[in-house]
Image (tube, rainbow, N blue to C red):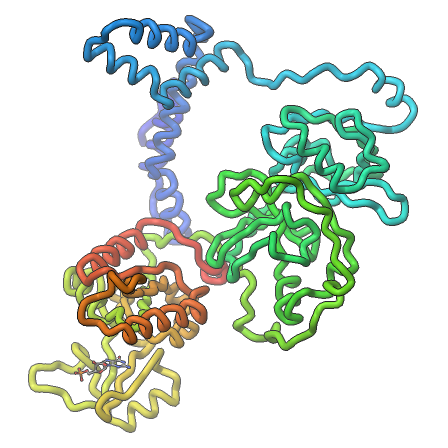
Length: 563
Ligand code: 5GP
C-alpha cells in the first residue's frame, strides 16, 4: 500500500485516498458517491489553491508598495501626455481596464490592512444614559443597503418594536438587533413620538454607519440558524401588489418556477426567503404555504392580516431590483379592504392548489437509471418528429417507448420494434388495468404507450424520450421516472408584417392560444421551455439539454430523492 511522505500536501493525500477507495458490497453507493466527490475537479483545484496559499503564507510576504492603484494611474497619465507607440497604447489600455483596477484596489486594501470600516467615536453623553437604563447602543455599518429589519408600534405601550429581522440583512449580520428589541433612537434622534414612516425615513437616510439606541428584548433570541429548506414557487408573487403583507417593501418578488431558499418559518404566516442564484444576502418576506392556500381559498384579501399589526422598514421595494423613489407610505388596511370578499376559490384539498413544492438538488449517478424525458408541445410544435430525429442521431443512448396498437402489422414491421401488436380485447383490458400513460384512436385503431414500455427502455440503460399530451404528466411525475419535462412551443411571429408566409393569421392565433393554455394549466410542471425556431435548431437545442441532464444537477421534488 502506498505511503504518504511526511511533507505530503492535502492534494496528494486526497489523490491517494481516492485511489485507495475499494468497492464494498455493503456500501457500494456510498463508495461511488465518495469517489465522485473526491474526484471532483473543483475540489482538486481548491486543494491546489489552498496549498499555494499556504506556501506563500510560510514565506510571510510583505507588500512592495501600498498604493499600486495610484502608481498605475500615474503611469497611464504619464504615457498619455505624449505621442504613444503601439506597445504604450496597449499598456495604457491594460492599466485602465476595470479588472486590473479591481485587482490593484484589492491589493492596496490588503497591503494597507484596511479591512474594517472606520466608525466615528461614540458621543460622550451616551455614558450617562447607559447608567440610567439597560439600553444598548448599537452601531452598525450599512453598506448602501437597508437595515434589514421591520418595525411596528406596540398597541399597548406605544413603543417602537423590532418586528422582524431579515435573514442575511445588515441587522442580522451584525448579530446585535433582535426581534422584540425596543427602538429608542436612530442616530441620536428620538423615535418615541415619531410615526413609523418617519422612522423608516431616519433609517434609510443613514448610508454609512447607523447608531441605534435599543432596549433589548427581555429574552434575547439566539443567532438565527441557517435553514436548508428549498421550494419551487408554483405562482407569481408581487409584494407591491399584495395588500395582505405586513410590509410590502420587505417582500421578495418571485416568479413561478423560481427556486426559493426558505430561511425562516418562525412566523406561520410570513416566511423569509431568498431566491437561489440571487447575489442579495438579505432575505425577503413571502406568504407561507398555509397562508397562500388560505388566500387562494378566500380569494384575497384574506382575513389574517386584519388582526396583524402592520410593519415598516427602510427597504424601498429594493427586492424588485429597481429603486422606488421615496419611502413607502405607512400602510394600513382600510376597513373596506379588511372585510374582504369570500368569493368562490379553489379547494385546499385540490391537488391543483398551487403554492410551493419542496425540492432538492438531484444529479443522476453513473449507476442510476437515466431520467425519463417527457416532451409536451403546443399546436405546431411537432414533438414526435423532434423526438424521432434526436433518437435517430444517437440510437445507442436514446430510445422511444414502443407503443401498443390494435392495427394489423405491416409486412416490413416486427412485433416489439415498431409496435407491440395486440388484439382489441387485450388493449381494452390493458386500458382498464391502467397500463397506459396515454392512449388514443386513429383511423379506428387503438394506440397507446405503456408504463412497462418505458421501464424496458430504462432497463437497457438508455434515456427514454416520450411525447405525450400534457394530461399524462401527473401520471409520470414519480420518483421512479424522475421525468424532466420539456415544453416545446413553435416561435409564432408577433407582428403582422413578419408573419410566416403561407400560414393564415387564424392558425397563428390558434398556435399562440394553444401555447398560452398549456402554459397556464401545466406550466408549473415544466422544467424547461424550448422555443422552436426550426426543426434543425430545436433538435440541436434538445440534444444539448439531454447531454446536460446526465452531467449536471437539477431541482426535483424532494420526495423523488428521499428514500
Ligand atoms: P401508423 O399506424 O401509421 O404507424 O400510426 C398512425 C398514427 O397513430 C400516428 O401518426 C399517431 O398519430 C398514432 N400513434 C402512434 N403511436 C401512438 C401512441 O403511442 N399513442 C397514441 N395516442 N397515438 C399513437
